[in-house]
Structures are given as C-alpha cells and as structure tokens.
Image 1 (cartoon, rainbow, N blue to C red):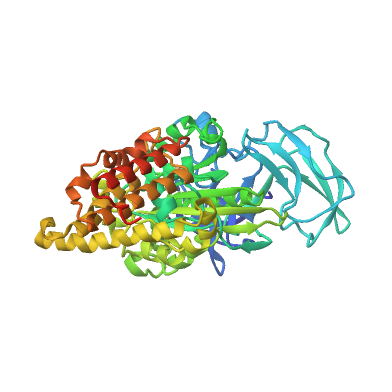
Image 2 (image 1 turned 180 degrees about the horizontal axis):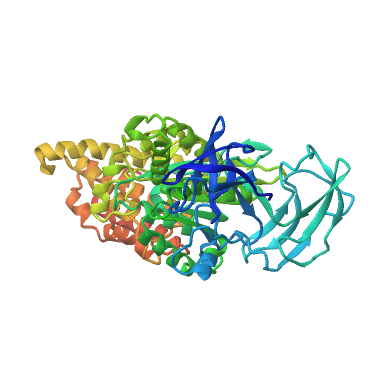
Length: 596
C-alpha cells in the first residue's frame, strides 16, 4: 500500500472534511487525514476539491493538514482468524485496540484485522501443474472445531480471466497468514498468493450463478418456522418500537438457526445492548457442537457513541465477511441491528455534505442504498462450484413504532419476509412478539416442497388452516367487543378457545426454558397437529350437542397448554400419546365416533 499526499484540508464539518488541491485521487479511495493518519474515504470529487468521510473523531484536524492517499478503496482483510473476533465498523479488532490503549480508543490507532503472528495448519488440495480459476480452493485450514476454512484464489487478480497454471504449492505444514502458499503463472508472470486477501466492502464478491431459494432457514422459533418461514439466502425485516424484542429475537435466531456462520452487526445500538451481546455470546453453547457459539460467530460492534461514519460502513463490512464465507460453501446468516441507525448515519452525513434532503430529511438515495444492501443476499453457486448462501435478517427501529416511516417502507420494498413486532404482545409478555396479523412471508411457496418432505405433505394444509382460524378469530373478537362472548354460539366460541390455546401453547416461546427455547421441525409439526386435532374433534363434538364447558374442563386440554414446556425435542412420541388421550376424552363426552 503506497501512501502519498493527495491534498490538504480546506474545511472541517464534523466527520465530513473538504480537501483542496487534489492532484491524484479516485472516488471511494481510502485516505489518511492529518499526521495522526485518521482513516477516511473519499466520497465526492469536484474539480480540484474533494469530500472525505472520516471514520474517527475529527477533533484537532485543521485547515492545511495533509491528506494521504493509499491508492485502494476501503477494504476488509479476509483469511483464517476472522471467526470469534470482535471488530468495529471498519474491521479494527477491538480486543487488540483495548490492549494497546485501554478502555478508550485513541485516534489514529490501528491494528491488523487478521492476526499476522498466529500459526495455522495448512493442507493443500491442489498440485503444481494444475490449472485453477478465480474463487477455487487452494487448501484448507481448521479455523475452529466446526469451521474448515478454505483458502481461495482471490477473484479479480490482474490478468486472470479464466484459469492459470499452478507453479508451486506449499507442502502441508504450519504457516502464518502472510506466508506464500501458492504461486500462479498468469500470462507469463508469476503471482504469489498467501492465505490473506483483501476485498472492497462496497463491491459484491462475484459468483457463478444465483440459484432459486428452496431450503428454509430453521430457527427453532415456532412462529417463524411454521407461519412465516425464511428461506436460506432470503431477506427479512424485523420492525418494532422500543422494547418489543428486536434484539432478543435476533439473539434467539443467532443461537438456534441452522446457519454455519453468524455475522452479528451492532450498528448504532446502545452501548449496554452491545455489552450484553459481547458478554453473553462467548458463554453461549452451540447446541449442535456443545462448544462456544463464538466458534461460528463474527461480531461487529459499532455503538451509537462511536463515529457516525463508521456506522455507515459497518453493514458493508459485515456483508463482505459473510460473502467471503459463502464463497467457501457455507450458509451464513447476518443479523443487522439495526438498519434504522445506519440510515440515520446516512442522513447525518448527507446533511453535512449539503445534499438535497428527501422525506424526513433522509437522502434521496436511501432506497438505492437499502436495495444494494439486501440484494447482496442470496443462495449462490460459487466460482468454485460449491453452493453457499447469505441470509440477511435486518432489524428496523421506526420512531414511535410507526411502520409508515421511510426506512421501514423502503425496506419492505426490498425484502420478501416481514416479521412485524407488536407492542401489545410485548406488553402482555408474549414473546416472540411477532404479530400474526401484520407479518407475512413470500417464501411459503418456495419452501413448501422441503416442508412437505418433513411432514408427509401436511405442512401447507395445516398452516393454511390455522391462519384461517386466526383470521376468523379477529372478526369474532370485534363482535365480542360489541355484544359480549355470551351472544356467540358454542361453535364460534370454540374458535376463540382454539386460537387462544394456539397462541399460548404454540406461538409463545420461553427463551429461558431449557425445553421451550428451541423446537425441532418434528416437534413443531406434531404440536400443530395436536392443536388442529383438538379443533376438528371438538367442533364435531359441539355439533353433536356437547357443551364447550365440558370440553374446556377436560384434563387433556391442560396437557396441550403445557406441552411446549413438558415435551422435550427427543420425546415426540409423548405428543402422540396426548393426541390419543384427546380422542378418548372427546369420544367419552359425546360419542363422536357413533357414525363410524
């Protein structure tokens, strides 16, 4: 990286600096401002002047200070050692910065994003004389007990259009990330490759093919998996006002979903929330391996008191890291908490650059930026021929819980799944507080084939039936408010009874209960079948004259209400026994099998 003077500071407006005397600079170039070498990015060029966005506190920068260009865009370092690390918005390792300067980060301080001194065991998978192309695997490194890191040929090597011949490969052994592990012959020139590469954060990494979405991301949260499923490679927004549980919902998904890698981006959130994440995640146990959850997690912490420019860059940093692991054939889930704070950073920077504001002061290009972020999700065939995915789960924090504000509305345009959080549910301690009336998923058709294989073709039918019951309950509740429940016949009151049972016994989930915090696909399906069996047999009994009071008093109804807490994931047969006791109890009440 060659550093040179490209201009001098003319004006300082917070994190936005006007530079004069531009001689040799390019758009989106990474620059260093002043003698403290503050990290910045050139975002606007006009004649011999430019605007630089600084990612650190610009206090002390004065007109006349030199601005140094690096000749490269703002990029992240990619290689073994990313997993388990905590970064800030521009990929500075926070733990190493703390060792260097204590609890408060000094301006101008930096450390390598990937540890240069750590030794890794490299196992080559190619040999000299082979021909390989961009994105193909050179060798592997065991990054954690769960993650086998693939060392890839970097895409976009100068002169490498198709394939290149391998001149030499390092033998199996222990090396640092900067050690040359492969040399390629590209158009007659020998190009050495190490285990470390860089990639610009604002440019999506190339893939061979974007594939259709067919496999759901299983989260273990029943309201999500059964009613509003998310496909691997899909996008979802989680909007909700303060205290409705956005962060807790993302925590639960990060812990229990079946993604291989988790990238958690704390974008402009309060410091105490990020502190909870940083304290809890290292101690959480991955249920699939019994080891620390950090062995498959990368954390990006950019709290609300950190420089606003770095908040704007943080989500690009996170999704670039996710794409790197996707290219290795992993399924990656990104938790962006929250994109509203990122949009507010865009608004502040746009205002300081004196750009024309649009709705509620946000820049006119807000929808474009939102679309660019979510469109980097997808289920891909990588350049190496493997399949991987990036799933984006973005929290939105609309002021006052107003879903009509610009960030929420523009996000809804570009995502295909929407988990709207309801303040009334959160106030009633119903978690996850995902509203079954405001939420939707456009992935139902895509994942139906996968679910049908797991449920003998019953998932789509059962989901449709319970959603219709919930819709009927809404209309009946409006009548009840006018005339009271006693004015309804038992057949309609039973709809209210079944829906109430469904909400408490199925939709509600206790994240602190060892049994209830996670449900397997099989348990979810059987629980729903038990509740629908109660609806079918109970309706038949009422039509034969059995009163709803008798049905409600059955002991088995209480067992159904508690099954989420009493039936573990490895004893699904207990749900079959509950269904059998339900049939016997109802048959004793009203002879519902007389006609058979």
